[in-house]
Length: 605
Image 1 (cartoon, helix red, strand yellow):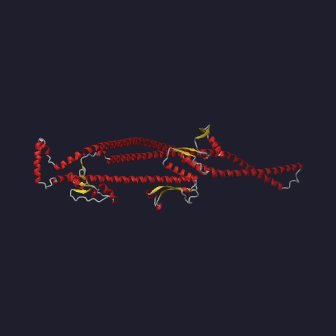
Image 2 (spheres, rainbow, N blue to C red):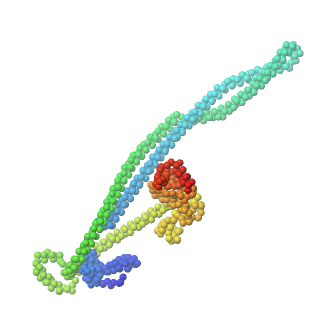
Image 3 (tube, helix red, strand yellow):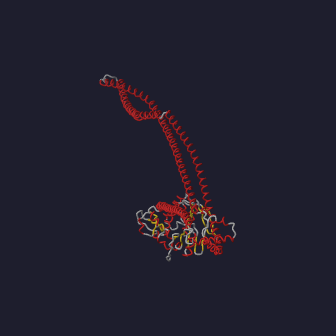
């Protein structure tokens, strides 16, 4: 770009001197704006364009070149893309506000549902306590009845035993008395004085005495047994039954009928209060549903307005294209009228500025009178040829143009600042969204890989070309990111991590499946089609993949093709594909037929 010597004039200044830019763009800007001057008015611009050969622009926007001048024009502010972008941003903010309101309403609704669930749980706990208390009361009542029956039986058996014991004691005392009498008689020597009949009677009595002694021993043994049994029963009655009776009486006193009625009344009142709260909560839910419906309607309305704005934007774009075509047509007419424009411009320059009453004053004059007036005026003007007659008009005009340009410059600066702020905000949001998504996928990748390979671990990291960025955080690395790398270990939690190019085919397949499942957890899809994903996997990994698909099948549909039995374990539908007569046939089969199909394929393989 060659250097240009700009004219040293008070009414003109080089446009490139008023531009602010980075030094490295100097040659480009001087190439575009280096041949353009900013002039105070059209006359100065015309004169400088003719004398210097440079393009001139007035403060009103009129353009003058060495070929002639181009003035006028109209700018439609309603077609401004900045205004449309501003309207679009406002509508987007309104939509975000509506979405935030709807999100808050959903959170309130979730809280109310949680309160309802908590209230229902409290009701269930209260009912459970009541049923447990009733069961305990029935059990205690049954124990009391059994204890009473046992106590009655013991008392019934106790009286005959006492009677028998008293009789045995009396018999024993009588026998003792008889024994003493007999012993006294034995001490006397009566056998020598007795007859044979009396001696026979004595022998008989001795036999009776021996027999009675034996019976006495038996009675004494029976008495000791009965006393032992009596003591045992008394101990049982004293230590267990009486204490159990006292405990039951105390429990009966604590759990009386009035207390149970009181507890029942309290539970009924609590139940009524919970039902009232439930009704109030349901009413609040209806109100929230209504508000949610209103918000949804407003959102739909805002979306409709946004679509209408987009439609208007397309219409405006089409209109701009049509105007451009019309401008091309008018350009062809411009060349034809260029000569006339130059001639008229020359005459206008010679005439200079006209007074405001010129048209009314000379409107009714004939052409001959006008020529006489023109000749007279030229004669008078020759006296003042050295005076600038347009200085005041030019000063006023340029002052007004300067004010307009300064206002326009301020508007453009504000618009530029808003656009740059918007670009910064959008760039920041873009990085935040990418980083948030990456963190989610990385977290789910670690969890899924630990499930698929419990003995190993895996991580995702952002890859950059600069090796010095390895120690930086993820947000800093994202600015210079070139991709995402996977590092896994199959041999232990603390074993060496390996990249994808160091893995076998089956390990690569497992890592790829872990990444797919991690993305599925982050952004679930409704449908997945896998074609022999377990072909290169070992048996334990096939089992882990099958369990993972079964776990994720609640929220999505999985269709897999396989020749392995592991994926058949949790499947809900089976189809067999057979090739007969050069045509493939798909048939719905049972689980057993599917297992047979796979086993036959493995046997023939």
